[in-house]
Image (cartoon, rainbow, N blue to C red; front, side):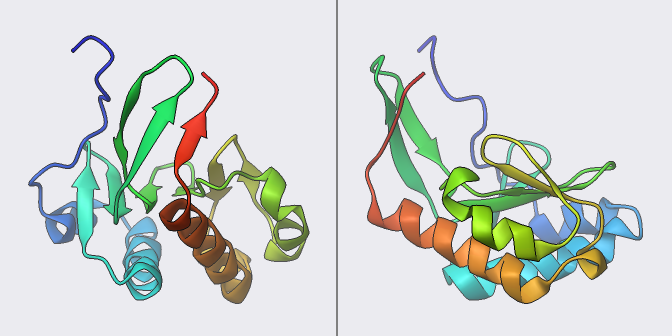
Length: 142
């Protein structure tokens, strides 16, 4: 299939991946792992080589392309922790103002250190995004 999603669940151990993350990002990755497990009630699964996902949902683009993706997830990258908020940033402008220092992309939240932000606001953002994804059939414009 030519339009197949490149990001898929793998059998790589999440614990081994996190153990390979250099400090100080490793401690933040361990904390995010705990937070997302608590919120989703789902086990952590590696998606591709660097993303950790929880739960799953099905998406469909207007073009007909469709696939599956994690319902909540993050990646401990060198520059920042990338937290995937699949509800999008526009839905959460008020919460983002209370979060602390961060940057955003279309569906990504970038945080340098968890200690820099308000964890209760981060939890609320993750809960909202996860609940949205799990309760909606997601259709995207490509």
